[in-house]
Image (cartoon, rainbow, N blue to C red; front, side):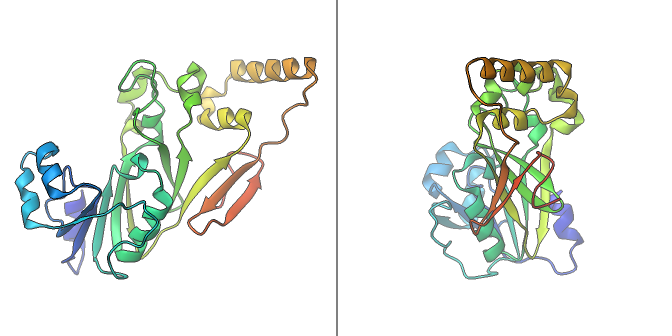
Length: 254
C-alpha cells in the first residue's frame, strides 16, 4: 500500500525516514531512526533479510526524549512510523517531530477495535499486552487513548475473542500531508474511564445501565454523592487542553 501511494505521486520522494522500524525497516527507506543500534537489530531483526539495513543511514536516538530529532525542518520527503506509537511513552512528542522533519508520511497502528479484543494474544489480557495506547483517526486527526487496565477486568469492557476475524479488527492506515493534529484523552474520574472503554453502542445494553444504576445506589447507601457529569478532556502537543466535554462523543475534532 505504501509502494502504491509513493508510485502515485508526481514527484517521487528521494529521502525517506523510517521511525522506530529498525527491526523490520521499510526497504525503500534511506534513513532509519531507532532506539537500538544496527548491531542489535541485526541480531534480533524480524526481517527476512536484515542485512538490507547496511545500505541505509542509521541514527540511534530516543525519539521520546523531548529533544528535537537530529534533523532540520522538512529534511525528508516522506516518513514512515509503523506500529510504534502504540508502544511508546510519548506519542504526542513523536507526532510533533514527525510533522516537523518530514513533508508527508504514513502511520500504522492496530485499530481500536483490535486493541479491545479480550484474549487476542494471551488469556486474560485485552488486545496486545505490551501496548500503552489505543489510537483512532477522526476527521484527519489522531486521537490517543490510554489503554487502561480496567479493560482486563470485566467482560463488558472488552470484545470477545470471536471478534478477531471482524473486518474492523485490522490495522489502521493513516497517510498525512504537510501536517496533522494529534490529541491525547485525559479522564480523571474512574467511573468515567470505565464508561469510555465501553466504546461501542452495542456494548451499552440494558445490563450496562443496570450495573451503573446499582453502583450509584450503593454509593448513596454509604453516603457518597452520585457521580458528577462526565468530564472528558483532550490535550494537544502544545499542552493546550480542550474541554471538559460532557460526553464521549464530544471533542476537538467534532
